[in-house]
Image 1 (cartoon, rainbow, N blue to C red):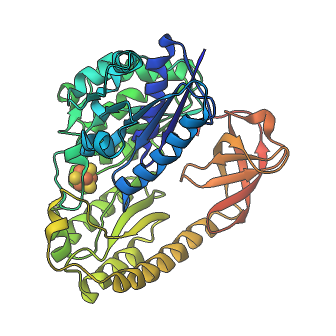
Image 2: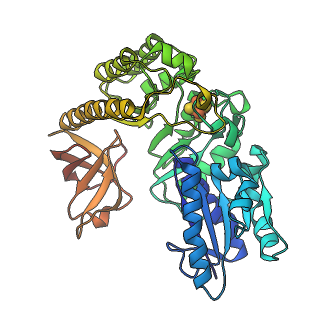
Image 3: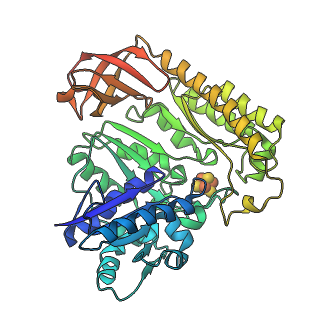
Length: 440
Ligand code: SF4
């Protein structure tokens, strides 16, 4: 067997893609390896979202190059993901030892690309955007864990002014219903109990004219599938059938990640988010009415160009009012090629960092309060992975909290009833009430 090391960065879609890359390369004799020591092929599966993403890729490539120089059989090196898509040929100029550059829509062509690169006839690059071919050409996973990802759409047409996704992942594409059902059924037959439906703008799903809510209802009929989640959503696409699915589909978990980014209408307009704060709050209220125990999470960008202290206070108010169970927050940093990178009213770094600290302190306070409210409650958790100590396992609550359990190794992959005995900022601890597997 040949050794394949994939290093993934960024979003869940990238981790899903890494699994698909491994599956598509397996027939060529590649087995995945945790380290790059002795690898025959290294793929850097890159992300363009974080600050200085491109610089980080070149620095990581430097490490791969050093490893290659140490090896008797020099490995092939590929750059995949959104930095690959955005940088293209530029990667070969700055790092000529890279053999392949492949964009996120072209992973189905990897066997061909790797075979070409192995012939050492020059650099190989594939950056086309045939999303339908990508999904058609990728094989079903051979194995899965109790909680699996399933991509239902890819790309985005929203063009928020800070975001690279429409440029790196292309236009919105929804997979056909039958393909999704086939993949879901296959994952469940291999042991998945929970599916997270993935997409850059997942609730824009419209495959075969179906709404996302219809798709969820249909997937919920699959025997053995016990939990459904989805991420990431846009507030504009919270259509009626999706909101009512939260009320009517018990398998749909009571957790919604609905990024708002800013609490100021002025900033939302500059971000091209296409909704106001009042509309966002209304949507949250409708979802909460549909599913009163629902937990919310969000993404926030602090210090977007032109953000004033009053705009930032608007963001703090949204957090106070919604009381998120969890939230991701970042200081704005310009992404090359996006409109906001050219805005001339950039906020000074020290102002961004001071606002970010205030926001994060408030988010953590709300998160802690959310976790503490679960103390003494019983709930069903899906036991997913080992903890740090012998016998300790970590499960996932319906609200995405990590729940620590002792002496539970034998319950891996099962849904069990527990009682919450400890609540912390980032996790809960619990004891088992009923170790028979049950439906959440
Ligand atoms: S909706 Fe999301 S993926 Fe699409 S452009 Fe906006 S931030 Fe990027």
